[in-house]
Length: 193
Image (tube, rainbow, N blue to C red; front, top):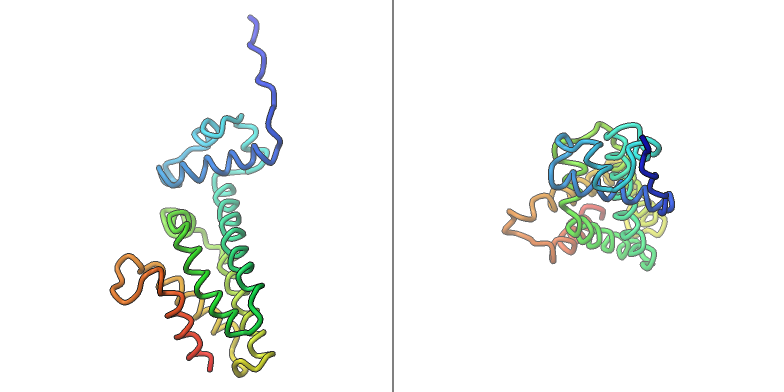
């Protein structure tokens, strides 16, 4: 019995990895993390099952990679906005407005990665966002925009306040995605003074 020839490998490794991650993200969004199988991911990505296990040990590992990819995208956009600002107050305002903007832009992906049926115990991704705020607070202290503050506490409060407010966008009668960044900036500015 003659086996049909194997399909030639035509895609670079990075593209196969992207195909796997994109397929997993799409399936996790449509079916949920628990209901999606590795077999479905590789079928959707049009790669061999061995290719999946070359990059990931388990479905949990690809979920973690998706979380990292999301946070790289999210924090990267915010950092770009921060880099163009010169004062601590401008940086805080840019963080407030852009964190809401980019959170809302991919909220369905964020919620699937961090809230829905799969939610790991690791806080590494949240820590990255809090560290970005700590940098703004340190810059503000250095430039005398606000006094010495407990950076860990204030950064955590700012991050979780923004996060909770965005989670409530669909039910809020007080704010919407267009004015929330400005409202957060005003409130956080008062808190920091």
